[in-house]
Image (cartoon, rainbow, N blue to C red; front, side, top):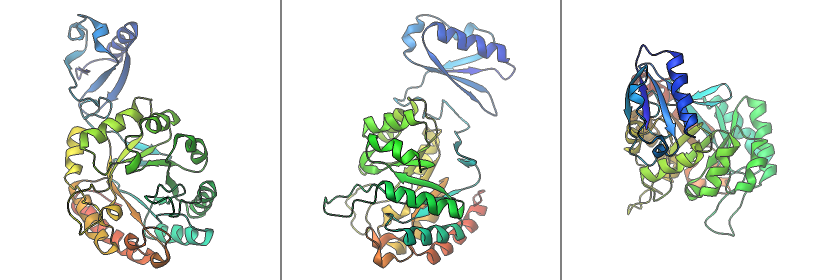
Amino acid sequence: MIIVMKKDSTQQDVEKIVEVLKEHSLGANLSTGSQATIIGVLGDKTKLGDFDFELMEGVEKCVPIMHSYKLASHEMCPDGRVVEVGELEIGKKKLVIMAGPCAVENEEQIMHAALGVKAGGAQFLRGGAYKPRTSPYSFQGMEEEGLKLMRKAADATGLKVISEVVAHDQIDTAGKYCDMLQIGARNMQNFRLLREVGRSKIPVLLKRGISSTIEEWLDAAEYIMSEGNYNVVLCERGIRTFETATRNTLDVSAVPVVKERSCLPIIIDPSHAAGKARYVAALSLAGIAAGADGLIIEVHPNPKAAMSDAAQQLTPESFGQLTKKVGELARVVGREI
């Protein structure tokens, strides 16, 4: 349930409501928007019994939230949440660009990638240190050593670091080097992992599961947010369909649906959707046109020599050309890079 305050309500009115909720062992999530202040009721509202908040000073109305996801819902924060990663903000007018190789392979590779994506306009260096591969015989990543190399390259170029964790016992290690943690498609419903990254309070990029509905995806975000970590960004990376021309099918329609149902920012991963570098630019533009808040793109100094996902990785030069196109489109749709 949310409690919508009147425009002329006072801080004292809000504090009295929060006090009543505490008396009933319930929590409160405050959202001060451009139109009104909204108080989200956290917990089992049956504890309130017959108590009627609409009789209290400053209250305009009470509205039940019918979704299973509460904190991630649009009703809880109608103006949308802005996710803060240091001084960077995701979910405002400025688009966020994350770029880098599928996997960290060596110091020279990740440094060249960092220099290339920085020149192309990226704010984040992405790269895999822990690699959840389909085959146990494929390259599994450099683990902590890879994270160290990413941090070194990012610090040298002024970039933030984002990398994936695939198990809850990797969070503390990754947290020493990463500004943002990624939960990949395979782990979207790894509820132990979701709760632990929620408790870490480190900003999280949550990718959509390969066969997951939007509601399941938002429920996964709720697991993170229920532990007190509201800095969650969603990532549409394509879903599995009958089509084989691309690696996955990019669900562009997920962007406006998420914007309607949820308060969380959403970005697009065109690399994993396409599976082929030549389609990445078109899918990137489609995502931004649909209203996405940014992109995460795979970029490698020499894609042909990449140890994983070689076919879908851009060169730094082609990445720079792409971001120029994104910048031109951004101005048309009222955004900027």
